[in-house]
Length: 413
Picture 1 (tube, rainbow, N blue to C red):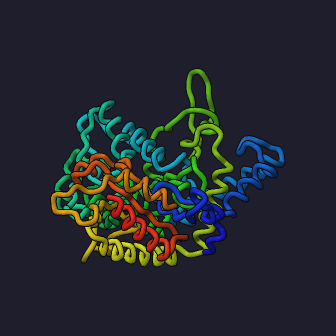
Picture 2 (picture 1 turned 60 degrees about the vertical axis):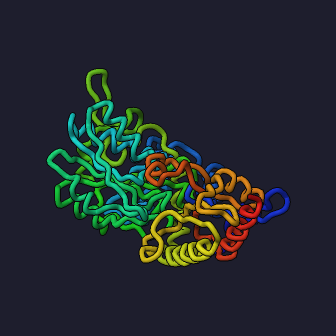
Picture 3 (picture 1 turned 45 degrees about the horizontal axis):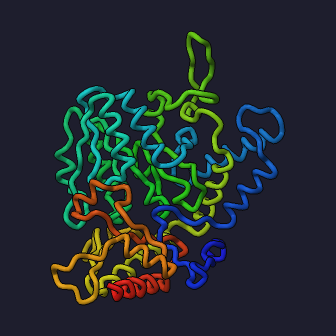
């Protein structure tokens, strides 16, 4: 990996400080090859896909379907028919919530989520709850931010229809034991959806080996463009789920009396797809595969451990999520709060918004707030946190700059 592949990393902030971009959990920066591939398609191969017989349409269709094959390969799926293009993880989860519930759930049925979920994996099920009268069961977490597996086992009963959990927490950085979660669910003949938004950019994913029933991730978090994502689903579920939206390309025949639907995956892809974004996504995934996901994971794990160790040396620092003996379960996201210098046990922590704003003035980009995880914030007893999240292009020198920046902000209070 060459940092020069990412021109924005050369940016100077406030005409003074080199950019230190540590907000990769929100979105990653894009390598030059992604932007160039999308630009090339707009200028040379732009035409609507699937339905055209002319040259440009055929060329654009080949690129779009080639991108689907790249996604299949990247996540280890068996068939391209199990790869559905969506607008992102949020839409993927909403698609499953809407369509799976219509096909397989009724009033009184239950879905299991966890206490560390992103709002997209809570609100989407609450909408189903309001519409159908289902019940949401919640896996509790331990004080160090790990799932309570025994409590998870106890949540299953004859009304459990689906489990929907995150692979990696976007707040705690906790790497959940998804294979264990999947095995337990399958022991009860219950399918499981894995939210891979925070895992796919950081580690090798193989949905076939994982044996999940659904898997969702976003393009913009995997160094690709915004507005595109992926839902993987086992064919045995997708075949029996109704379409998410109606429109062009998701049909076989239409009359005012009756409509028949297209084959997978097109049944779930109504309207003109973002065929240029799919090209950009494929180019991003190829970029990651060329580096090697194992190499990326090794680099980011080293970076995370280095950051945790350096940050723990800061007076008054509190890091959320697994540390100590469980630090190996902590991925490339560190949420923290810190007290002013010379603080007493009763001194409040520096407000996360103040910390983030002042770090920004030093050229350091972090995220502040509840990170679309308000129930988790209440469990942690805080309104919000500062969050530093790492990508393949970050360095130990940037971690040092973050640590120095935190200490400088401390001195202001």
